Length: 87
Image (cartoon, rainbow, N blue to C red):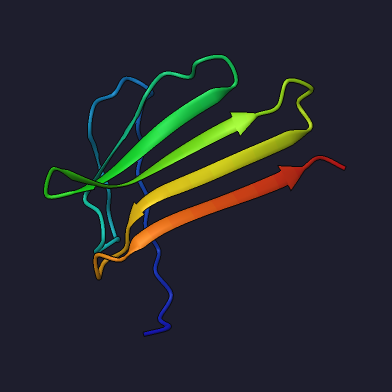
């Protein structure tokens, strides 16, 4: 509908669910401890994972890759990859 959404959460990288406020698509989030230069965060609705975000930093520290996989609110698949290069 084009309306802005403000949402947030505070979590620890311990794999435990933390509450999310202000987002109708998800109600909890959990993050796993980083392994080397990569980390994973899972977003859930009613206890079911609806998307997983993986972040990875290249060995030289110059590139950040964020991969999102899951489903949107209509149940359609989501598969996004964003790559950021340090200038």
